[in-house]
Image (cartoon, rainbow, N blue to C red; front, side, top):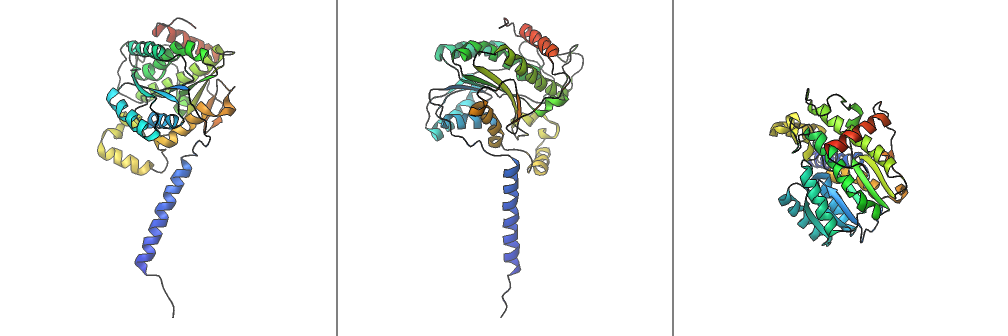
Length: 325
């Protein structure tokens, strides 16, 4: 007597296999988890943009490693919600919410002053916060918002914290950039996009500015024990996409999610390349480098040169009213 598999059962098991295989493929495409188990007891870490997306996953991981984590955020209510979740999950009470609006240089200076009163050390600074493709708007100081938050805000924050980082050496600075820097252009005659504003172009310029800042700062910090590197976390589904075209409409978001679900990383996977650059012992002496998929990548961009880097540094120093280091 021959036995045959009932068609409904066949379809059911085939469907399960297809769904399971799809999830496994998505997990593979998202990259590996950072595997090493460094303990960060007594290490102090600042993460900007820590109340959602990649930032939240960074805080979660660092707290589990027993670091003292300062969540530098604009939205204090959301920050406290995330902080509570992380503390309960990690059993680490040394996680703090502190106000830091990168669109306000006064807020940045207030954050740094408060931090220095509370902590004498800083071992890791992760400049993670960002804004992308927003309508034309300006920071409190009148700087185009994407350039002001993504570059100028972190430029000021980092420079104000350099004395603590040097005193805590070895220490690391991690600047989150993007592959979008490849199409960026530093507009020497219209850096603030006063004459012409293109949301995508302004974003690319800000991410290119981060690359230039990283390379210039690495040279400035030689011999101090403080390293600075940039990292592209990949294309990650986070709130940073909220200003993009179809994303402003429910059906548009649903369509984009359906078409790109397989290929866009989850926030936890987007955090892994940043953790690699922040923690991996093999990078103890590596500085001024741009990382993609946990590998150093050459920046082949005509504008990544010392002349433009020096010019941007001088302008950034002026616009943030910062004394040269």
